[in-house]
Image: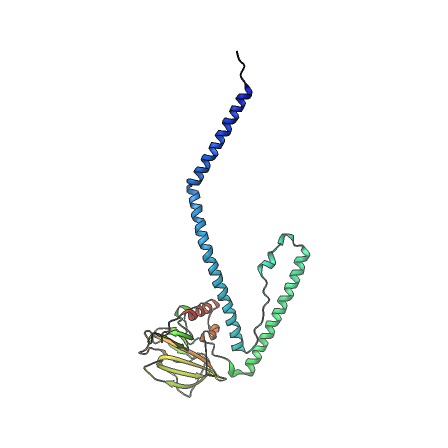
Amino acid sequence: MRKPDFRALAGSAARYIIASASMAIVLYLIFALVFSSQEEKLLQKENRLYSARYKEMRAQEKLIGDVIDGLLVRDDAIYRTLFEAVPPKIDAVTAAELIADSDSLSESFYLTSAATKSGSLMRMASNVDRDWEEIFRILNEKREAVPPLSMPLKGISYVQTGASTGLRHNPVYKVEVPHNGLDLVAPQGAPVYASADGVVTKVTSSRKGLGNTVTIDHRNGYITKYCLLGEVNAVQGRSVKRGQKIGTVGISTSVAAPHLHYEVLRDTVVLDPVNYLFASLSPEEYARMMMISVNTSQSMD
């Protein structure tokens, strides 16, 4: 009887195992490439959504950055215009400075950094104190220079904000024309108040254009105009106090809805009234009002 060749059997078994394993791998790859599991399909869908969302977030990030830059410029302009002083510069500390390489930083580094930052904060506080002293000095020397900072309407929300100064689409002429004030939507008959102490220099009665208008001189070049009034409670030549009622919101034949058209001028130069309302609003309301007034292309008068 012939003895079995174990070497040949082992070779055959090895070839069989290799062939089976290869076939299994090939079948798995074919299955994986052609057929996706439900979980894989969900993951692929999420990846596509994240990819699209990432592009939107990058665009939003750029938009927010542009808005912040614009707010910084406006803040600088407000500081110079209202207080006639140089705005304080803040040395911002980024989060990256505090957390970068945190595992490798020594205790001495933290102590040195803390001392440096605390010294910087102390200098900033000192600069703020100095700036406010300068502001109070200016206001004390030029009491008549205090600008009109109060809201001409009470209880108003940012959603009642319309177009501000600049080229705006006129509802009557259907073209872009200069808009010299801020539209504030309010119900007809709502009381209108003087935004600062002053003297009523002109009262105009008209059913056309900007309708009934009260003009107040606040001295040192500041003038405010309250247009499209219904009732007029101000008398030309009389002094008025901040918060004193001068009329009510009305409407004219050239506008579609009742609102107050409010203007601020200094030395005959048209200013953006929104820049003078921050003292009457919360920071959130003021930021939203500014955004709406800038981005509204349609005026109401």
